[in-house]
Image (cartoon, rainbow, N blue to C red; front, side, top):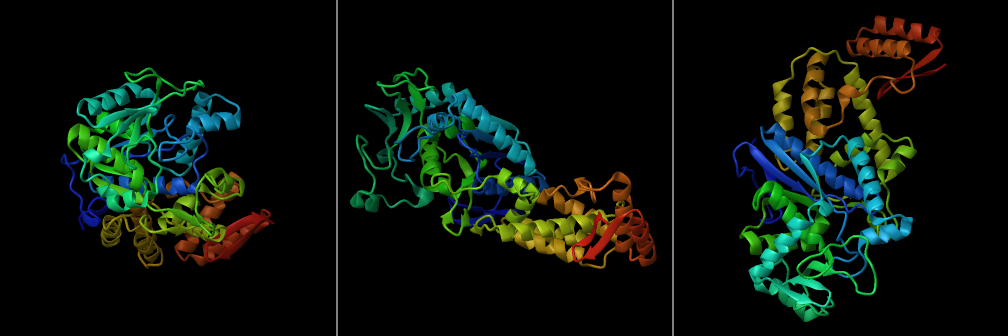
Amino acid sequence: MALALYDTWSRTVRPFTAIEPDHVGLYCCGPTVYDYAHIGNLRTYVFEDVLRRALVLNGYDVRHIVNITDVGHLVSDADDGEDKMEKGSRRMGASAWDIAARYTEAFMADWRALNLLEPALWCRATDHIAEQIAFVAELERKGYTYRTTDGVYFDTGKQDDYGYLTRLDHAGLQAGKRVAVGEKRHATDFALWKLSPQDSTRQMEWDSPWGRGFPGWHIECSAMSARYLGPRFDIHCGGEDHVAVHHSNEIAQTQACYGTRLANFWMHGHFLTLDAGKMSKSNGEFLHLQSFIDRGVDPLAYRYLCLTAHYRSKLSFSFEALGAAQAALERLRKVYSGWPSGGVADEGFVVRFNAEVNQDLNLPRALAVVWELVRSDLPTATRRATVDRFDAVLGLRLTDWKVGEFDLPDEIAALAKEREIARSAKDWERADRLRDVLNAAGWKVEDGPCGQRVVGG
């Protein structure tokens, strides 16, 4: 089955065809580095990683770009409030530059812990101020901007189709007067360049043709994606909360500047929810990955949990669900590690797995194929080779895991693995002998539905 993906622009699942044969430009909105990324944010990055792996599965060479927003993101999407970097600086008692460096590194650590593939380029907003100024200047030259006392704004009234991505009801928005307009011409207009307040000094500000200040949030992605992928590329990703404002504004800017909607496909991951609702930093109720590690949970168990729900469906988080995901991952690791290498993948299972992946990244159904394979009567070496093919998409690092690698001496771990192999081969006599050897060495062997567990006697 050929790859088909859901496009938020068209509201349909449609066949994916690259603009340039065999090559895909993929841009993913990265974090605003004023605090730790919460696990809801990280769910979106897991989805995007699976997308990239699916593209590679289908033979594409992927140029993957992720931005780091280290300036210019105000507390409110409506262009008011305090810059998030300045807010983080005040909270932590450190410079905004130090805050950006600290939380960028924390984000990179989360990225590695979840086994997310390294992008071709991390691009920081503060490294691309010149490109953003040039972009705003071009919009001004083309007549899409106006100035207020606090900055330069994009005039959304110049575009009849502004907000098409989110199917915005302009008439209803204006009639309801739900958004404070202030000096804006329209409620939907947004800042391209914000002027620094005259009565205070900002830590992050730059000279521009309009005065000293800093870029708006939305301009950075349009400017950096155009530089590294061109003014029209294949796929732009983000969380579902980006649809109404951030991505709609990116499209507006790029249409005005280049005459394109920026990306051929717009794809969005849905929220992770708690009992109290959407997870976010704003209410102080959020979890970050380290909180799992502190509880003794493998970060890849969270990755597994994300795979159990389709990226376009809500995923309800609980520690019970996370525990079930960790148990499933441990079972898969144990049975996999007990299978011998050297086999050849079963193409029937591979075709079925790939078909589920290619149907808009249906990972829950793909996982069902994995477990069907685990329970099958195929030779164990064949099962291992087949799962190796699956794990190129799942990203669970199954080949890296070793029985007892964290808590068993090397010689005991080797005996335990030998016994797992014997049990997988149904060589019960050898398995019993190895259990006796382990028992004699002071280790207790417990056999259960997730495989064997070796603990101190």
